[in-house]
Length: 64
Image (cartoon, rainbow, N blue to C red):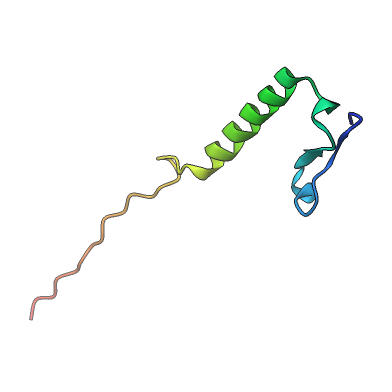
């Protein structure tokens, strides 16, 4: 919603944005946005222990 900030080509549908020039946002705001987006992506990329199922393969022994 800022002037100079537009939807990024090809990935805009994922809410990614592109700066038309580096003066579109103050440097501190750009740094904050980059750090926040990195943290969001990294949080989804790392599997958490609660999402990993720890299953032990079981073998049924048959008495012949």
